[in-house]
View 1 (cartoon, rainbow, N blue to C red):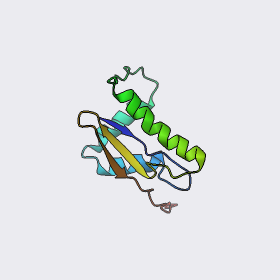
View 2 (tube, rainbow, N blue to C red; view 1 turned 45 degrees about the horizontal axis):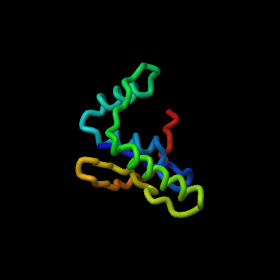
View 3 (cartoon, rainbow, N blue to C red; view 1 turned 90 degrees about the horizontal axis):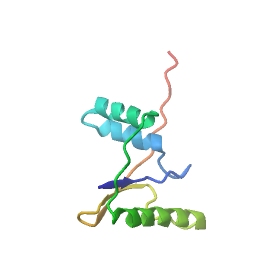
View 4 (cartoon, one colour; view 1 turned 135 degrees about the horizontal axis):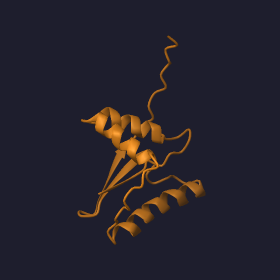
Length: 108
């Protein structure tokens, strides 16, 4: 299973920060998720990701479709959504990702 996006378009879609914030809020084990993100964000050497032969063209095609549409000024196919691709069932599920509201910071 692979997850792509959401493609972040400033002023139009959720950002990576929004996506992480929503994922953290929904996590059953938030401390483990935070630790995992810290590892991924670190300079630690990580094992190579193994892709099945079918994954590369499917993922590349989905990414290319979004980028080509954006460059052409057309509607982006996955705009505002995160795509979950299950190559075992050949299914793509779209999950809407909304920007987090801006909250006032308490100066105290």
